[in-house]
Length: 389
Image (cartoon, rainbow, N blue to C red; front, side):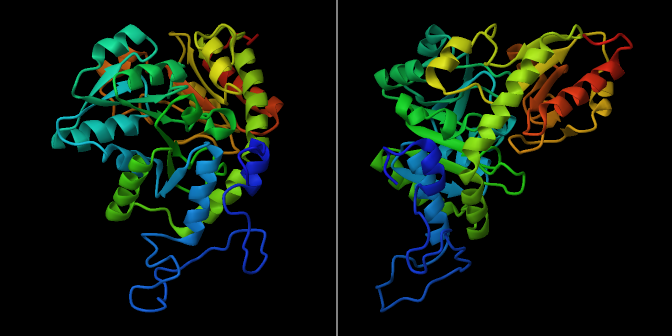
């Protein structure tokens, strides 16, 4: 489809639309490992499915188009995508990462790449002076999430991109929480966009996948080499499932956000909830920037209970909302970041950036919002005998 088509239309018809040979409206699952060659050194565009597969190629073209990029890459997981991107750098280089990022991103930098000489530094990327001060010759890229996981802090992508490019550094943006339906970092100046497609893009908690998108030919060539050489590619069936999930992304995200706004506004009124982090609230510090750079606030909310309340009772008191890792599925999920998604981050760092042991992260699903609120209400009642407002 053309870039002039709306995002909603491109979700369904973008990339490679259907099968030209048979007229099938869906891309076939090319469940093959290899391809018969015409003559020695002559083939039909495919040699081996690690190097290229038509189903995966359709997904890669789709995500590139949705992000308004030129080159897309599909990997076996979000961490495989992040790992491939980090392989663009070498020993002696440094990556600046924002204060709260997914724990797996921190872990792979700290435990896998750091021993090979790729260093990192945690920076408050919302403060441009702090970012400017941290940029040295060794720094090659800035890696951010916006909104960030799990405190939903918002970074001004366009402004950070300008700083990065002024110093000839790359800007990498993990766009998992927003998806290209709500935010397109490449159009704001980012150089590389990453997704854990397991989350909203897949949308049904039934696959693991990662994506990366770039505009620059040189970066694309390097990423393709890394993807093929290291082999962490997405399989054909999962590529098919992900394309199918993306087709309903728009209507799902609309419902996710509608529910999340109601849940966030309800939470701020509860007397035993002391902090609510959601960029859709006008009181949120990132509200104005979020409105400027995204089409909505998303559906991830974090909040804290009052100190005297037993957080374990809250989790045990939930019946509809599942206590589980991950996010972005049609079902509502809740997690405890400090012991689950961000447990790999040392406690002193978690405390410094505000990821307390009392923080609860909620992925608001697309169920009837009244049922979600009832579940939260009765769980809050289990931690306090007082009646909830």
